[in-house]
Length: 147
Length: 147
Image (cartoon, rainbow over all chains, first blue to last red; front, top):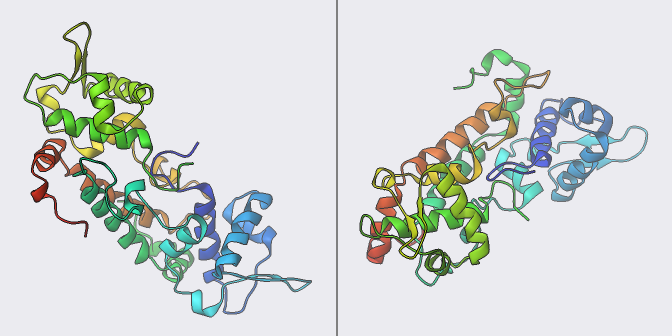
């Protein structure tokens, strides 16, 4: 079951796939089987993730013998937020943030707090570039211990 | 369906119930029916929310004719984060943040980003006191338009 305010497994796999693709030389392709092994994800489940990424244009799918998945140059600087939203749609910490205004008769003073919390979280995900994370993946010494 | 990274309806109702109780004079009680009307929540669903709040000690339940739900003085300064976690357990933006360390063979450079995003979000929810929100609910002119 998905916990409250928790990323789906699909979006987590998508981020890992994108980081791997961003670490390949420009134009290089990876097979679905390779991506499944790297993301430690069942291949059938990864198909759906790759479908969403392809559908959003973040990833290009090539068919045939030399086929595979490629990160187009224009998306090498995609952010973690873009990858998540490609899978899940716009991040909304609370349903009320999707509405024009608070729909409760009495209004709700918590709505501004939800908006602030969402902004603080999405700002960090928007500033995290997949390409930069791929560089860190190649050089684990750049990854600080979890604070 | 619960969206990725979205608060459950139960936790949303819990926050609204707590804000209402914090706006009552100390020692005052509210009935389940009143709370359901104020939170705009089906009474049966609210029962479960009130059970969780009572179980966590954030709310006291009194039985009988003069019964009802009360916010004990020591919890008037509860934060939105405490209310959410009373319903949902610890906030974990990604499952990996519950583990001691990244469990993937290759490590994962995204984990620190998840940790930063979670911290940014929970800091805001931790600093939002229910009591302060109740004061704003009484004086809507204090609530800034959604930024």
